[in-house]
Image 1 (spheres, rainbow over the protein chains, first blue to last red):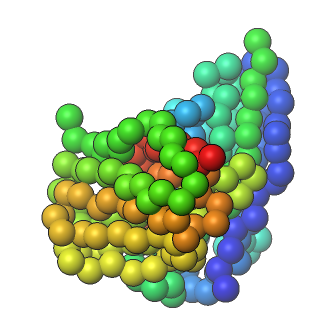
Image 2: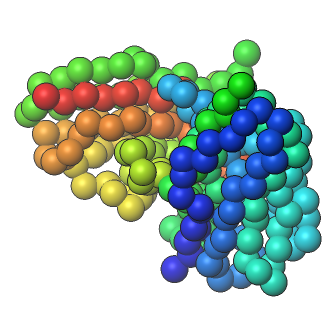
Length: 115
Length: 112
């Protein structure tokens, strides 16, 4: 079945460091891919998305490129800030699940950025 | 402002009691979802509903029940049959056929 695998955390970086959070997927067909962010004690917010191969999603300095050949959607940011501390979830659209609209989430990667 | 509200933010119950978590949205979304979040487990789908008066079980529906009598509302009942109910519960919604889900702030349920 479809699945998402994220790098295990926690990830601890100093402010202004480069961030990469790895995400790989297994899927039938051509799913859409998403990154969501969850700040402490809150719900999830959509950070960025890509709907087809080679698409690059970007938002708030974060980027991720849909790589079909490596089945990956790694999240990157050139210079992280303390305010980026959160849990990041990679997700894909479950095209062949029970119904359209369902997402499959990775387990999340906690990022802590130190001043 | 459009959005999803969940209430209360924190909920405490004694073992053996049923408890209902509220989820309301004013985004005019057709689809609504309930997830459970446990540390290190990511999000697991409990129930989802694509239209009013219809809903389907997700991956971990046992011990839970839902209703969808209105488009705006999708309450979740955690029954006494749920063996490990303590968790963070998230409600989400989306337009019909869209994979872009919008999440509420969550309810943290503690059962002792």
